[in-house]
Image (cartoon, rainbow, N blue to C red; front, side, top):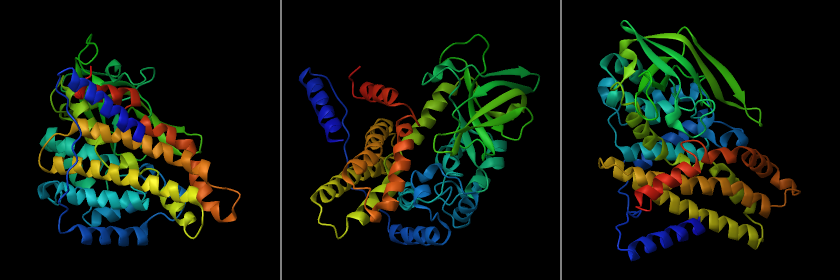
Length: 399
C-alpha cells in the first residue's frame, strides 16, 4: 500500500507542476454518533449468540449467506437503517449504519444473504422505483426476508459492461426478457434481480440500456451454480427465456440504465467490506503472535494494523461525506483499490512469515490457505483493478 500511495503522490505532484488542478483524497475526523458504543455492543451480542463459529467461514464473510442470521438483524432493526420508516426503515444516520457493518465484518458474521439488498438494491429502489416496486420489496429487505442480486456481467464481455446483449422488448403492456447473466453473486438465494439489459433494438454501447426488477421465481428464469475451487457456491449463471414482466418492472427511466447502474456501483464501492475481507486472518495472526518472541511476526502485526487503521480512516471519511449528502464517488473508488490490495496481500504476507509446522498455527493455517485461494477475486468484484484505476485517473485529471 505504501508503494501505491507514494506513486499517487508523485502523480499528483507531476500534475501540479504542469499547472493542472488535481483532486486529492482528504481524510477528516469523523464525528461518531453518541449511539455508536451501544450499537457496537448490540451487534457483538447478536454475533456471539447467532454468528458463525467456523473461522474459515468467518473470512470473506460478506459472501456467506445465512438467512436466519439476516432475519435476526432485521428483527433487531439493523437492516434498512437509514431508510424511511414508511418503507420499513429506521431513519438512522449513515454513520450509525457504518458502525453496524464494520462490527459485522470485523467479527466475520454471515451477512451474505441480505448484503447486496441492504447495501445497494434497497437504496436504488427507494430512489428510482415506482410505488409498487418499493412497497413490494423494500420493507421485506429491512426485515431480512428479501435478498437481491445484480445482473451486470455477461458471457464473453469480461469487464466491458457496455457490451450488454440481454434484451428487453415490448409486447403490449409487458416486457419480454431474453438473455444470460454470469458471475451473479447470490442469485441462488435471492428473491429478485436488478438487471441491466438492452431495451432499444439496434442500440450500441451505453445507449439504449434500462434496468428491470426481475423476480427470481418468474417463469423462464433459471439459475445454474458456478462452484469455485474451494467447493463454495457463491456465483451463478442466470438464464432468461421468454421472461414476461409487467410495465411496472422497469426501474427508473427507460434508456437511462447505464447512468443508473454506474451510480449504483458507487454504493457498492464505498463500504468497509473493501478492506475487511481478510480481517479474520489478521486477528488470528495477532492471537498466534501473542507471547512469542518473534520480531518478524511483531513487525508484520504492526504493519498490517497501521495500514488497516489508515484504510479505516479513509473509508469512514467517505461515510461521513455520504452522511452530509456529498458524492465521494472518487474517494470510494480509491478506498476500493487500496483496500483490495491490502486484503489480497494479507494471506501472502502471513504465509511468508509464519511457520505452519507449528501445531499452534493450525487455525491460522486453515484461514490463510482458504484466503490464498479466494483472494485473487477480491479485485474483480465491483470492477477490476484496471477499470478502477481508469476511474481514479479520470477523477484526478490524469487522463
